Length: 334
Image 1 (cartoon, rainbow, N blue to C red):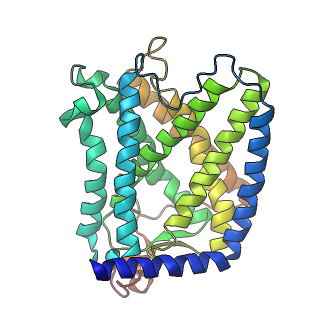
Image 2: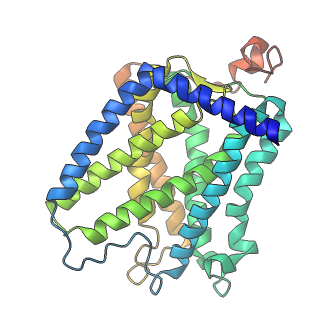
Image 3: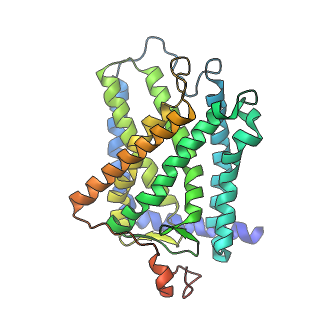
């Protein structure tokens, strides 16, 4: 454990030193700082709600299951983030093979996927039929959207940003299967955080044009920040990368952020006001599919604007050329 801790700290210090000298990170900090100033200015001038309840979480009386699911997802998020930090910081991935990647990603997704059926009491839904539970609807919504993101959107990153996965893995449509599961717990965490921020905004500001402008600005801000922070935090993982890091952080964050520009406000709608509309599983699936199509159109519009061709490969390049597999798996087909 001592050796693991020392290795993780050394990796952290090395990463901080690199980031402090990286021009792409400096450019992104300037962009984010400018966006933050604009957002704060809007928050100051927007009229505040006369009710003044300003809540982050759903009401415990009228929407207890959604409140408990969001709290569960937040607490679980701390756990899986810690696991990933240990794996990347301690370079444990150096010993991983196809089975290890599957075990880690499926294992970390399993508590979120199985909770509604095995431990429904966590979200206070033990007395609710399985198909009526908010936790099932939320997992279905995120599951559909994250599947579309991996199955389709990843190829846009391959083509537009020249991204690449080079670790050993079984694939589906040219995408490592563990990523389908990893995206699920990533997106659950992201969308709960966006729910908190948007709910706080809607309940704190007076309805009107300024609130609408602030909400749109907040969604763009959160989307860009989320995309950039994910790219930054996994930069220490050598088996996922881009041809041009500066382009990936700047344009890539905006490109990836298109996912969340659509999905953040759409996911908030799910059973947000159950007294007015209670979503069925079918409703959740339809909205997730609609969200997925909207994002696909936006991504393709950017691709066309950039003049990039779109090609789909069933095999990642490292499956055809072993020299492209990341360390420490060099010269082994991925």
